[in-house]
Image 1 (spheres, rainbow, N blue to C red):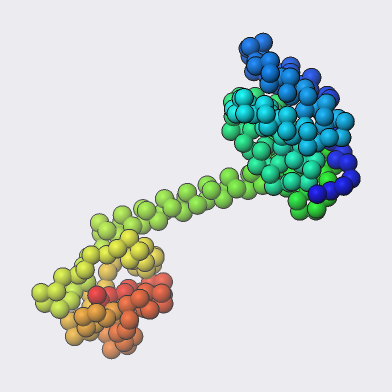
Image 2 (image 1 turned 90 degrees about the vertical axis):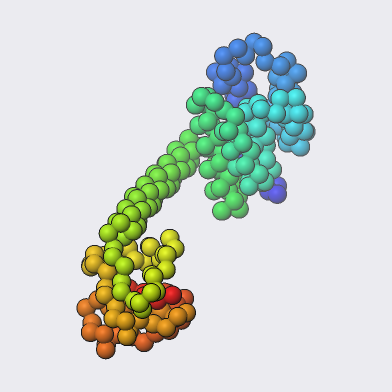
Length: 252
């Protein structure tokens, strides 16, 4: 825990007015008066340099109203001041789950989460200047955008893979084998491998009976090679991991 005073402590008196005013949802007149009194007490304790007492008052308020997003936010600020950065971020995230459409409180939670992460990484109290908040917000927005783009790329790749699997199942003919021996059903993983193998050749190979691997074995088959130049049979699991693009894995 840091011994130096946390530099956003001056925000608490101003935030009290915001909390009891614009940040409260419509119908604040019906807000539990005991909770409001505990919140005021917490802010007074915090301003007097007694964060432990402030946290205690906030926790008592949460026992009365466990779904009060404002109390969770203030408890997060208190933990940030005390140097409990991971807990501060978690409390702000909890506040966001209960916040509804309160954009003002959501913006403060975003700052609190970013400030806790920065402080945890640098092992010091974060700056509460407007410039520092703007920089943290920009970094958070950039990271959110990068994740959104990555998720979109993953979804597109998943769709392409599913399309390739459907095409393989409906169009690929069964390769020839030992008379009376049917080709085994293919698992989803095998279908994925087949889809990759068909990237350059959509027709399945025709394996002569004399070159079909024995029961319990597999072999890698290259459609563009003569039968006598194909790799020898081997363990199916090992060959599956070594399957080149454009080749087929045939056998049990």
